[in-house]
Length: 130
Image (cartoon, rainbow, N blue to C red; front, side, top):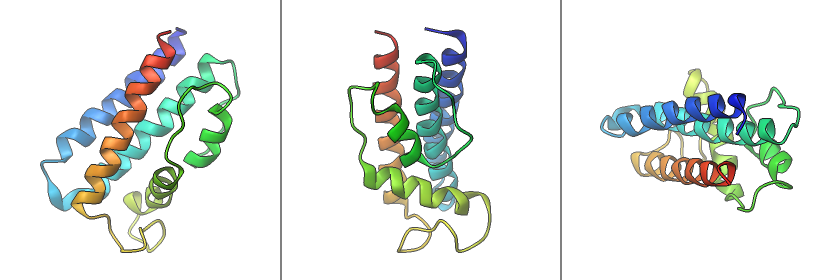
């Protein structure tokens, strides 16, 4: 595995650990979701690096998923990718952009998106260690 790929995964792991720690703090679900988004984004970018592809400057997970799709042997849930992408802006700024249709993510939604990110991380590590 390339060194730059390892760096992307190291940063993704750090975000995963941060999100896991935040699960004990229910009022800050937006931060759990922010770090979950970052896990997935960094995993997808690690795959692009490893496969000598240009890493686009985008946070849109559907766009990134489409770019890695030819290389990976797993398919991510596009609805959850879309949810994470929509929420991403609102986790950083106090606006109405990026909210789920029901508003700020509930604790249950944050846990679900964390579990999704964790699954993507584990599958990405397994894929890249082949």
